[in-house]
Image 1 (cartoon, rainbow, N blue to C red):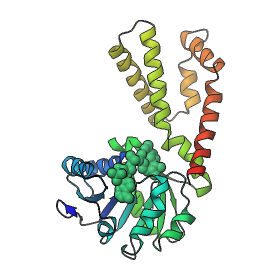
Image 2 (image 1 turned 90 degrees about the vertical axis):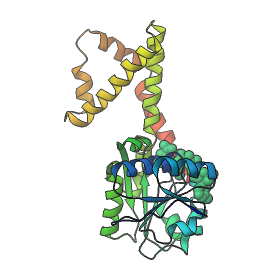
Image 3 (image 1 turned 120 degrees about the vertical axis):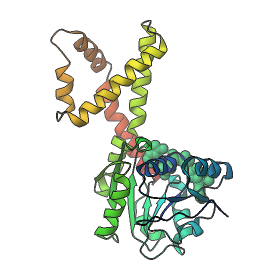
Image 4 (image 1 turned 90 degrees about the horizontal axis):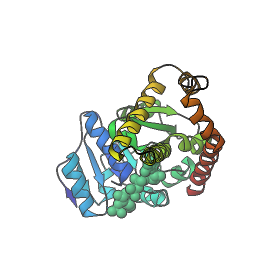
Length: 271
Ligand SMILES: NC(=O)c1ccc[n+]([C@@H]2O[C@H](COP(=O)([O-])OP(=O)(O)OC[C@H]3O[C@@H](n4cnc5c(N)ncnc54)[C@H](OP(=O)(O)O)[C@@H]3O)[C@@H](O)[C@H]2O)c1
C-alpha cells in the first residue's frame, strides 16, 4: 500500500524504514534542508498519515516495495528488529543502494551478513530534528568512497558528522547518541533547583535553557576547550567556585564516567 506521491529527487532517492523518533528527526532535518524527498515506512497507519501530513513524504507499510528504487536506505527501527528488516528488504534492494543502519550496538558484520549491499553504521542524535545533529559514521567493507560521501552529505544536511572506527562506536554512542538526554536531565535538575530557591518555573526554565544553549554555542564556536571555558567563569573565591565545589564533591565527574560506561556496555549488549 503506497500513500501520497512518489519521491525521488534529481540527486538521490532516499527511503527511511521506521518513522519513529529518530526516523522522524532524520526526515524532518532532511526535509528542512530541502535536499531530497523521501519514502518513509511504518506499520501503524496513523503514524504514516502524521508523517505524510507533516513532511509531505510518501509513506507505505511495504518495506520491500519502498526500497526498490532507493539510492540510500536508512534503517531506523529498534536494534532487535534491524536484522529482520534488513533480510526483508535484501532481495528488493538495487545493487548499488547503500544500507545505513542507525541502530545502537548492531555490528557491521551482522548487517553485512543480512544484506549483500554496502552497509554504513551511523549513530545520530535527536538534535538533527533542528539540523544540529551529531552523527558518528562507520563505513562497512563494501562501501565505495562515493557512497560514503553520499551518506555523509545526507547526514551533514542535518548537522555534523565524524568518522570513527567501529571499535569506538559504542563509546561514541555514549558521548553523542545518548548524551542529549544527559543535558536535558541536567537542565531539568537545575530548573527544579531554581524553583526550590523561589524562582517561578517559567522564568527558571528560560534562564537555564538559554544558559545551556549559549554554553553549547561557546563550546562549538569559541575555539576554547570546555575546561578553559569553565575556568574562565570561575573567579577565585567566587559564587561559581562554590557551586563547582559542590558538584565535584557530589560526584558529578564520577557519575559521568559511570554513565558513559553503562551506555557503551548497553549498546554492546543490544547488538
Ligand atoms: N531515540 C534516539 O535518541 C536514538 C539516538 C540514536 C540512535 N537511535 C536508534 O534509532 C533506532 C530507532 O529508535 P527510535 O527511538 O526512533 O525508536 P522508535 O521511536 O520506536 O521508532 C521505531 C519506528 O519503527 C517502526 N517500525 C517498527 N518495526 C517496523 C517494521 N518492521 N517496518 C517498518 N517500521 C517499523 C515503529 O512503528 P510501528 O511499530 O508502528 O511500525 C516506530 O515508529 C534504534 O535502533 C536506536 O538504537 C535512537
